[in-house]
Length: 107
Image (cartoon, rainbow, N blue to C red; front, side, top):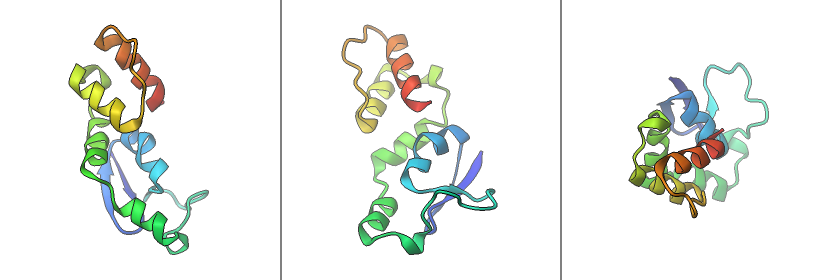
C-alpha cells in the first residue's frame, strides 16, 4: 500500500491502483522526495483542479477495484471497469480474454 496525494486529498491505495489511475490524475506518492514531472497544486488551472478533486463514484470504484487481484474480478466487474476506463472488450468470448485486455491496459 502507498500513500498518494493531489495536494487536497490523501488516499491510501495499492501500488497498482496508484499506477493505473491516480498517477494519471495528478497524484504523487508522499514517499517521493521530489515530485518530478508532476504539477504542484498551486500551478493547476481551475479546470484541472476541479477535474482532480471531482473523482466521481465510478472512478473511486475503479481505484478500489485495482486493489483486488485481476484474477478475482468477475465478468460484471471487468465490463464495468472497461466502460469506466474506455477499454474495448468487443469480441471477447470469456472472462479470461477480457482479463488479458484489461491487464494490458493496466500495465
